[in-house]
Image (cartoon, rainbow, N blue to C red; front, side):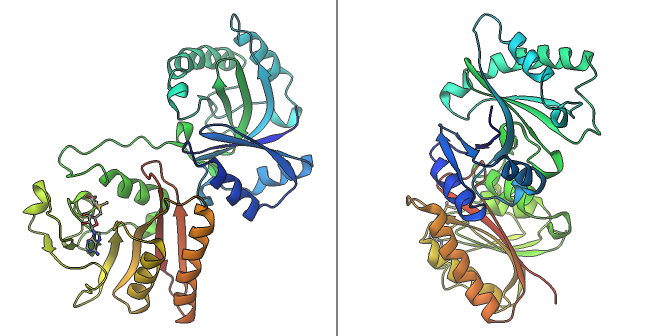
Length: 351
Ligand SMILES: C[S@@+](CC[C@H](N)C(=O)[O-])C[C@H]1O[C@@H](n2cnc3c(N)ncnc32)[C@H](O)[C@@H]1O
């Protein structure tokens, strides 16, 4: 089989993966588009090698995970294990184990969910076979083996480098919904802190924040639970549950586009449903004028060409911050808890 690159994504976002890849890698090859995944077949094997060595999934926006495929098999329903073991045995020297672990995966679709119970049983079986050969469960190994089943009749065998990939099966972080958070949106901000913000940038106890478009309070809840002791929650709508009465939270019924704090805050977070270019201009203004040093916000992207729109918004931010002589870092990612939106973390860097 020709070497291929397999991308997992939210179903419906395959074209965005393709647009991002074309923009960033721009190498010749062809695409096979599935649901919740897509596959790129590079024309030149050297491109596959180069990307395997250099491509860090965490830096990408739309792919949840990027797998480097070395084999694809059609499977007989009566015995899937034998052809897979044979294929693994005959892998090219460079890809023979041992592997850190073996992940059995499938698309994040309703059809994919039907494969999940098979994947648990099959994974245990394969794990035992490979462990007996000394090929799996080696914590220091440089690669992880992935078996991706788009259907029960087909499998893609490939690898990731754990230091360059997302450390969650299917590329999906499993987060538990906190029982007293007022909305499920809280998981979006929790995931953003986990996936986008480095250890050194995390919220520290006693920090202050502004939450634009705060109601009913899921994001505010995250900021409180992470240690912020002063949060201005800006929204005309009502805050709910504990966030309506929390002593650290001041709810202001004001327009999020007009509100500015009297003195600078540590964090700006913003989940207002608005045109992405307006959000880009607003966040830039906050950082340029020094109202906050860092921000987490999202761009709602209901349009078709999401990658292009995201680039347009990032340019607005760059024009404003670079134009004001501010050095900054920005990371954007289509999080698992995002729907038609992309979440960004933006921080100033000291000169
Ligand atoms: C997606 S909801 C926010 C959910 C919230 N982050 C949470 O975790 O519960 C968007 C909110 O933005 C608010 N909003 C939209 N435009 C606004 C504006 N111009 N000023 C203030 N709030 C606004 C809406 O009232 C709505 O409550």
